[in-house]
Length: 199
Image 1 (cartoon, one colour):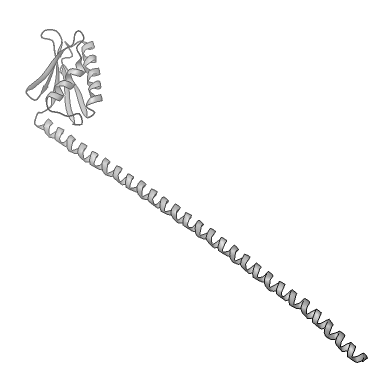
Image 2 (spheres, rainbow, N blue to C red; image 1 turned 90 degrees about the horizontal axis):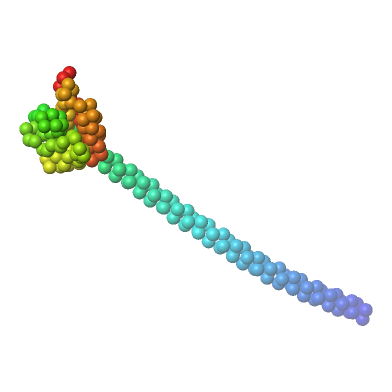
């Protein structure tokens, strides 16, 4: 009888121990499952964050490339514009030189027949004149004469201011020179030389 009770006591102790082990095993499995879900969620979150950063970097790179392309195109357009402007100016200068060879020079003649008067001519055609005494607008009259001759503001214009230094008044010569300088505000390619016939 004594042995039987000992046996039964051992079985009871093992059963309780087995229950505890099963409960612990169940808890470990549940804990591992919870941890694996947390690890999976954390990994998914990191992947989503990396994808978001990658997409943002891609958009930034595309934006920078577009900006670089736009800047390059703007510089190309600007260079083309300058090249066309240089070609246009060169052609205008060549035309003015050809006109000079043919005697199509604009001349400003200072004469004192009836008081000081500036005569504006192109080749043989008189384009206008202005009195130097009083409030005559010399530069305005020169511009008006150039406009009337068919010249445009961007055209190259070769001019000669001719005066007799022995009879011309210094004040009149200086007024004409100042007026010529003001003409270049409108006709920026207006080139004038000064010829004193007494020299």
